Image (tube, rainbow, N blue to C red; front, side, top):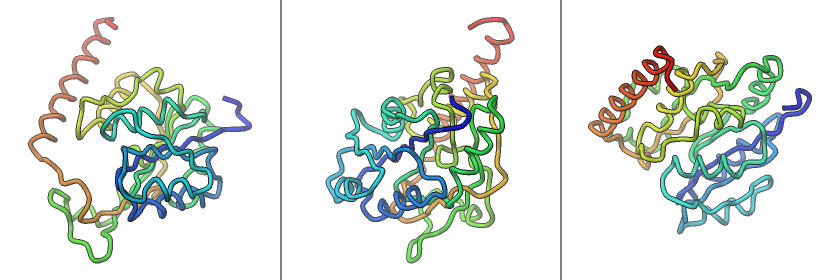
Length: 233
């Protein structure tokens, strides 16, 4: 990467997200240091999502080649022109200096593979807390090991791999675990970078499936570490 210039591709998956999509796109376009491109990966929406995306500057509209959020992330990564990759969901918002702060750190620390920050959850006015969401998360802010706060070098996905499309809930948890097990260099900015909207249309958590996937990921991580300790690949 040229240390004097970093190009950022933002990946924004959407499926029938017309209600909040324009706001999400605007929070990216209004960055103090805007990205090179916003890749809106549409999962064959039948509402106005495509129309909203096509009318927005910086947006390159892509039609998803598979199904699911992980597939959309991966398709965007493969199509991205930037050497830095960031993600936002269609109902979330970035603070205006998210990208500039992360780029500044990446330039100052060329050995850093990825940067994350903190996330603040807020309940959309007029909505009920969705099933499975913990109300206490609406208080304060938290370290966000989630794609919405992430900026990563595109080359990191060559080393760590893409998101596991077989996982329905925890593909991002798995990806961050693989980064850790590989010894990738990550940095946490102690600042809120993401405003995460909580509303009645959020996907409800399936506790049993979530638990099963997390247990499976724990076993995978232990096995990776065991292979590393034994000098395996």
